[in-house]
Image (cartoon, rainbow, N blue to C red):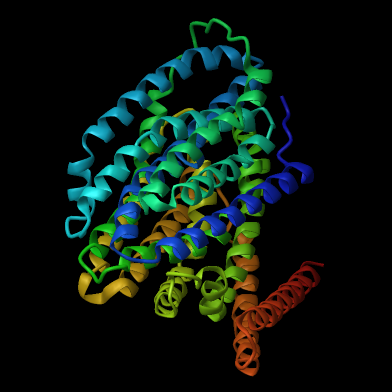
Length: 491
């Protein structure tokens, strides 16, 4: 059977708009948290508890769950099997496992807080918040399952809307329960997780209900899930390292790292929109043995993601302080918090390209029906580099630099493994476009610095708008110029 590997522009547009709206609400959430609670010991305690949903999200929504189930559902549809039988054979086991892990996490919250942040001042508050947040292991897991099934079925709007529901739940609870302090945010996280499930349930029931008795060949993909889960957890361990080391630094350090990471992650998330939409097509191309289409899809996704994050890198290097001030500097979030957060963002930005490459390339290793441990080994090497470099004596900047270095090493190893193990992606397929994009990012950063210097006396929103416009215009102009030269060379 021949499959198409070109995602529709409508699916990409709808996904991008909904993800962007979810990210905007995420900014509103962080703005509200910063304004009401600032960056102190209480917010540090909540953020330690937030490690649970932060770990569950990549493992059970965008990471392992999607990497296993999207190819699994895609292969079933490629073979002409009824996906409802696959749901019947996998979902009950998943729900039982998630309930068990959620209960164990709630029971072990005191131990987990001691391990994650042994030096945190308000450990009791962190434990209480973690027990409430542990419910997200169940809700995120179910939400991730529904998302994977719907995306494999070429339904993208409900999965893309889950973070709208999630952030609305947090914002509502934080505002309504603000007298409870940071604990209100933990309640909001739990409520938002329920919203992620509810917003997808109608679409899922329309396509996968009623269930069908599974055939003999259908079984839960435990063997395939294990290496993907270990890879995802190893990637998330970078956050564990940050929280652990940051807990021994000055009060508010964990909060500054968190705010910086949330802002820096937005362009990385947006850069993966095309790859998210194209993943079912990529999985079906691999299942059908269409290697050339898979190579083209991978090369296109890699260049598209790199263009977005390199433009964002230039913007954040130049405008980080203005971005933080416009977004967060209100109420309890002071100018000193803005300066500290902006310094971290500039360092995080250096790892954005590595983050995007890892997010795009790792998907190929998990399209096959055989387990692949190579991404886990690459991620373990990057994590080891992060651990070695993240020294308390180097402060929060050292932690951010260790994160950027570790993920960049992982990206390089995945690209090398991609050429040898899965898809023979020629270096020229991505090397020339990436070179042009790097030149465009360098030129646009220079244009942005010049513009920001000339407009230093203007209000921050105006300065940010003018510098951002100069960066975007220069980036697009240089990228188009280099693209024209390359096309003429080929002609």
